[in-house]
Amino acid sequence: MGIVGDEDAYTFQAQAGDPVTVFVDNGTTGGGRRLSVTVTNPDGSVWGTAADDSLYGGVDVQVGRQPITMTGTFTVIVDGMGDTTGPYTLGYSNLRNDTTPILEGESAAGTVGIVGDEDGYTFQAQAGDPVTVFVDNLTTGGSRRVSVTVTNPDGSVWGTASDTSTWAGGDVQVGRKPITMTGTFLIVVDGVGDTTGAYTSALPTCGTTSPPSRRSGPERHGGDRRR
Image (cartoon, rainbow, N blue to C red; front, top):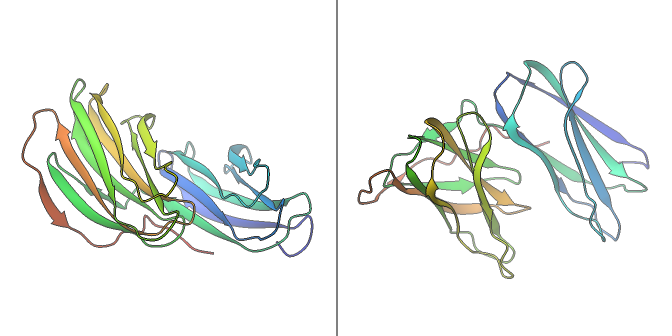
């Protein structure tokens, strides 16, 4: 944000049903500096919006982690609230073609490579299956936290968890309850705030249990674009 009232605009292409997230890392310094982000659909209507409403400012903002409802060109608008000026980093993630299948009893090693990065994994389950998804946080250093979200085949959220510990570095888990639909489920692993680093994602139980195995995969960056 170069001057008061400045707005920056970016565009991206997406198809209806794409799981999209737009993240803004607030790099401004000093008290009361806040940012907002708005994503508009191809027809100009608002798809999602978020603003830093914290007391002291400096908080990152995010919209999405839900399916796009139209096909075409979307616009992202980043705005400094009030008198805010300063730097930021914009991250964009579309996991439509960037997910890794994971099986029951299997682990997958991954890395949150850049701020705003998201990694996606998919698994198959039937209604009534008792499912647990676990993420082992292997990041180092202070305030490094990860989150995990599992979405149903229809795009709704089945479960989500985020590390809220004082010193960070905690593992996160969702589930230990029956799945309510049948089909393909999406796991999204994300670094909270400025967090980057390594993790291991595991699907230890889904229906009948089996001994876990470990496999290593390449770093995945969820289609992120750093601006």
